[in-house]
Image 1 (cartoon, helix red, strand yellow):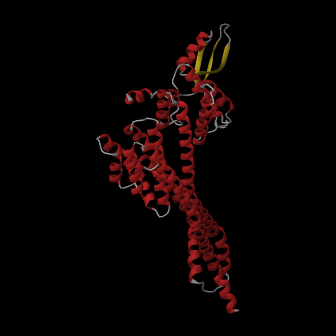
Image 2 (cartoon, rainbow, N blue to C red; image 1 turned 90 degrees about the vertical axis):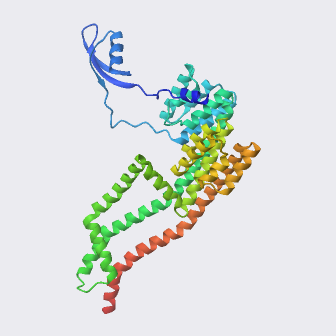
Image 3 (cartoon, rainbow, N blue to C red; image 1 turned 60 degrees about the vertical axis):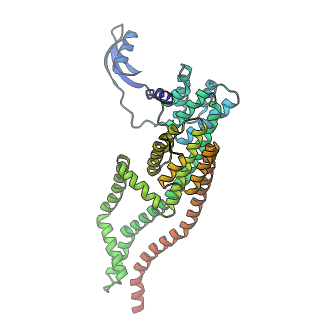
Length: 415
């Protein structure tokens, strides 16, 4: 039954109409031209004939590279949409009117267009879940499954509130994890850029000054000048190699599951950051599982969506293995223990939830606990890294300054 409903929710992806430029002849024999939206060249030609125009050339309108781009739809926009729809429907506003109000009043033009398209689709008799499924970039399988479960059980309003809360918590968690990763990365990038500027533009000025001394330079100064000379001669190679390596690695990570697995596993083993990522993956696992189980989605079916929501391929694959074990009759807590990825506390709470029939409540408590842990870990990491980063930058810049002023001090001592 679940499989049939799931297969039903695979409609063709919604596409915006394509604009075509046409030239033709009207009934009076005059040459006319214009623009026409349509699904294909043949459809445009047929429409023109119905208008009494004999079509000549019909071609797709080229994109205007200088035209203003439509604003992107971000996950936070979907979270706000879910909360607004849930609030309005629970207040007694009909779905059609709610979608109309939210769509017309949305400040994001792309979001407005999508919501009104969903409203028009629902008005034509399509279910809300099927209408949302036509925009897979913004509404994933998890979202569609929950909406479908709400429509079938008659608890759509309650599930919309659950979805909105889930998305808000998930976005907050993602923001914290990004903060943990971006902060040290940004500092290291700034440090490299500052060092490169000193090496390429500042050190050569001192080098020209030292050339007139006619004296032997200290070893530290010679080393810095040699590095500076390398930067001046091969700056294009250094920057090109770094940018190319990063872009190439990211592209390979997207295409190769082995590289993605290796990268995600290495990140989990990093000191401090690995702990944050592990707790974040467990929090997302527990939160997603709790929401889907509470919505009445069967455990095995729910675990497929849970795997994709963990945000880490190691936990993704582990969840798929757990799903396969559970489908053969293994208890969830035993399957979790076998993966060796979940702390004993999580396994024990899941075990208690299975025995007491309150698995969704236990998973929600696990999610709350680990979300707080991620919050505390990010704050502690920031506090610990700030003095370390300051010390690193101080040693780096201080070394360069000392290396440049050593010959001057040496000359002053001789004089």
